[in-house]
Image (cartoon, rainbow, N blue to C red; front, side):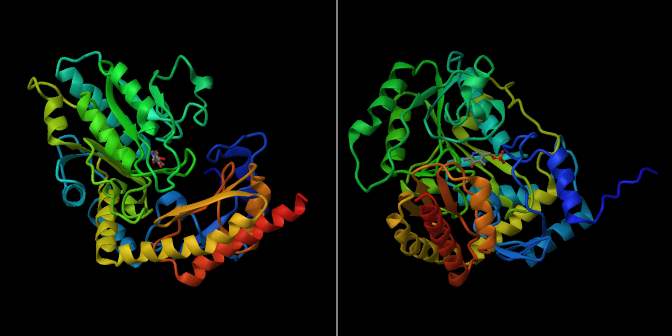
Length: 437
Ligand SMILES: *Cc1c(COP(=O)(O)O)cnc(C)c1O
């Protein structure tokens, strides 16, 4: 037997981690410190040293009901006792069917066909594949490119990366490997107005490349990891209209925005337009495990198989994992039984009120918010390791990137806990301003 014991000393374990384990977007040579979390419960993350932090991130949009939720725990345990996993080729099961029913009834009527994926990035790959196969089956084999807007984020696999913002997504490092897609300007941050000129370049790109474009892909209303940009719903109406006029499919990536985060069940409801394909993920399992889904309209699903023999060419090993499907079913039921709209609206009001004073701080450029999302953009990029440490010392878990200090707390957060998050942001940014004087 090999001995895998590592010293119980937290420093030794953290040192092992530093030396051997990659964390998201980190260097193996100069990794930033990773905090050791030993437990998570409700809105709290508990560190190894016993400190409890109020979670402002919902573990990247996922933990909408908070951690260690008794109903979600039970759902996993019960499913585990009947089966953890079986292949999905030639086999089906209750958790997958129950989840498909919920996804189909929650989303817009035309979306009737579900493909289960292991992660958000994979669901974007599948959406792209669906769009290209749809046109292929229709005999339009040249329609293989995508049109999107700058400032987007759709995942880290190559297909998804190809439609991420070319600068943030570091396309120049992968030129030659990445498919060459088309990029219209980033949607203007919402200020309550609309000008047709804002869509002109998108329209021009779409019209001049319509024979090559399979689909437009965008994150509706909120561009997440590409820059936390909140934009006017009129853009979505324009996207839909222009796609219809030019025979191009419309894909909405609601992986971050889905399941109530922006104050509507799905962000596209702010505009009352319906996509041909939608990607869902992140909070779908309440933050318990990885699972995503791509839903398509009947037009797309049947179109792919137009000649009778066409099949959708995808089938991940862990497709429709029963544990993940069952916890997603429970998470959705929990959401629907909760007063989630009131909660998200209350969070929206409180964030707006309590982050507004940050505008006065010299290091702050602007503040914006929607639903259970609050963003403070600083004038220069934050010093991440330093600001992270100060947040932890203030009893909160907030993970900024670049110039963005943002929160998207679990929907169950109490007003006082939310105030702790917002005042930590104010205090830490105020302190930073004083240091840089
Ligand atoms: C997180 C995210 C993805 C990628 O999902 P993963 O599960 O990390 O692969 C894709 N699109 C959007 C909008 C996201 O926020």
